[in-house]
Amino acid sequence: MQSVKLSQLIHGKEIDFVTSNNHFQKAFVASISLDSRSLKKAEVFIAIPGEKFDGHSFIEDVLKKGASCVIFEIGKIDSVKTYFINYPSCLFIGVNNTRKLLGSIAKRYLALFDVRKLVITGSCGKTTTKGIVSRVLSQKYRVVASRQSYNNDIGVPKTIFNINGKTDFLIQEFGTNSPGEIEYLSDIVEQDNALITNIGPAHIGFFGSVQNIVREKKAALSRLDESGVAFLNAEDSHYHDLTENIRSKVRSFGLKKGDLFPEKILDISLEKTDFILCGERMSAYVTGVHGVLNATAAALVGQHFGISAGEIKRGIEGFRSESGRGRLISKGGITVIDESYNANPLSVEVALSHLSELKVQGRKVFVFADMLELGEKSEYYHRAMADPILKSGVKALFTYGDFAAVTARTCEEKGLEFVTRSTDINGLKDRLRHYLNRDDLVLVKGSRAMKLERIFEIFSS
Image (spheres, rainbow, N blue to C red):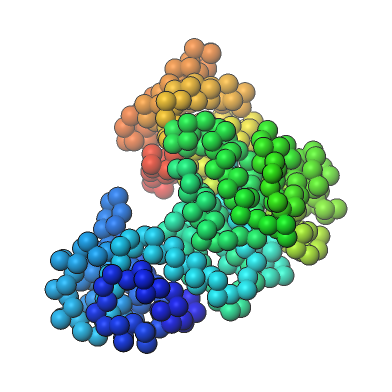
């Protein structure tokens, strides 16, 4: 974060209480922390209430570490005012809602810089696409990109605070699990351009229908004016819904149609995928056909912003997936495709499609945990997973959770011979230990809250 006057980021009308207005007017901020564990001396600490922890409970910890300023919610003043006398050098600011203030601070900080802003959202593949886009644009520009899944009202400001006067590009992922979230995030970022990977029933339990999800994702495009560009999947079934009545230009990508698509997919292996794109032969660490689609989206963005074909190739080939998003784990001759970070019906189908593309010496094994946030359609979508599982060539299905058990039962009814159900993670690990042999290929996929990565302990022992 670049040092800036605190009064430039917080408007006086937002402040309900301040220990010293004179101190406030003179104060500078060069770093903001939301986590008492990692706070460094002289940082500003914003106490944010959360579902599991309340930042107000850790104010004494940050004061002992030398926080220069503590921003708290005015409703908590009775528990905070005891610190005013004990820490007179620290500035205390009380506001109505620290979470919303964080967004306002990020918006004002971002407005200080002349940077291009690209938002990436979608139901599947947005984090991977963001990673490849970042690699491609970094061949020519100084890029700040959201880490991991810093894609909500807390993560977006965290990313923005990494910008400084040398930054050319902000690449920001947007996630959503409630209506209006992307509109809120767009108000913070005020993006110039946006990319939507695809639309599917992710978090449909909160939206009620896929059409509502389309409207939510489209909010990322509604922010764009005539000078902006919407980068869209030409083969997505909702492509025309997304393009209707938007002001920006549209550039499209796909596997077989659009403004850019790969000339040829040459070879798909467990480690890499070889393909020809932009006239260049590429050998990239992307997952099969869907990975090529993500790379094509990134290449289209690169082309638009003046990245040469050779630079696009270097960017795509330099990409490496994050933990839980296609990372490979090998132990004792067994290979695991770690897709444990999250799951929705579209992303599970994509992962299974990639599995079907692979040739293996041993057996294909699928470890599948509940897909959450599907609401009243949970059983429907879990039953629907049976067909892509059977088409993928899976020989054994291990499920974890109550909804995944619906998938297990449906697969049994459709003829899959080896199926097990677990509601206990240790039971799941024991079953896998006894079943797996050398040369087996294991795909692991489930929603984040299921913490399916715990099974990897059996490969480290």
